[in-house]
Length: 142
Image (cartoon, rainbow, N blue to C red; front, side, top):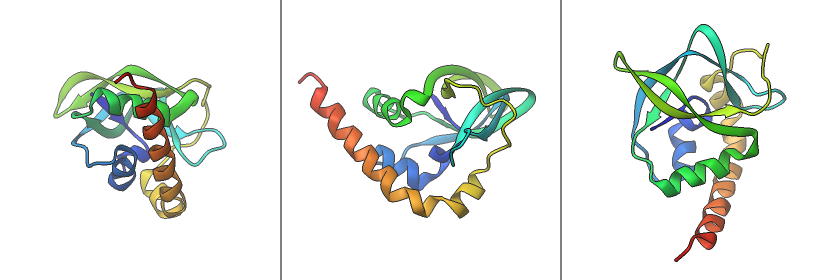
C-alpha cells in the first residue's frame, strides 16, 4: 500500500503517471501534515504532532509501478512506512518523505495546486513519466 498526499491524489495526474486508473481508499496519516516543499509547487509530508494528513492509499500498484513512482519522485524523497487510518482502522503504508528539512513551511492544498498549477504541469509530468517508464522497461531483465 502507498499513501499519497499531494499531487498524486489528483486522478488525472496519477493516471498520467501510471498510464492507468488506480484504486485508492480515503486515508489519513496521524501525526503528519502536508506542507509546501521548500521553493516548489508540490508538497512534502512532515511529522507534526496532533495533525492528520489526508490522502489516499493506493492498493493495487504493481512492483513495476512502485519502481516508476520511486523514479518519478526522484532523489528528493525516500519511500518510508507511515501509520495511516483507513475506515477507523490503523494500518501501515509506504509514503514519500523528504530527504531535506521542511520545518516551518506553510500547509499545502491540493485544491489550490489544481486551480493554480495543474494545467501548466500536467503535460510535462505525463512526458516525464512516459520517459521514466521507457527507461525502466529498457533496463529490466527480459
